Image (tube, rainbow, N blue to C red):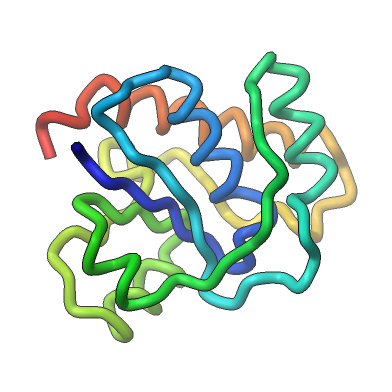
Length: 144
């Protein structure tokens, strides 16, 4: 079993989408979750993220943002940060060789935090980028 965690700032926009996208492949050898550096105190995910998942026919559960902890890090084989500031934060707080950027394979793909974006098209572009990267992770998970 490979344990994978996606980490963004609030565990509200990007990391839950990455989690449910990877879960949608149905790989029983993967245990996938998400967390945030400073989780938002809203028991859900961003409505635009839910809309994106629905639009792409991706099933998702009720989401409760959670904080990344040393226990989650310790029990994860692969830890993917959704942007460079999250990566640095994780590297400073936790000593783990398993922390890498979600765009590890293609640094030109932008997954910057879309939370403050007013334009839904721009927000969905970020989610499309995450989807592209998650697809690549799924195809290459055994190469990490």
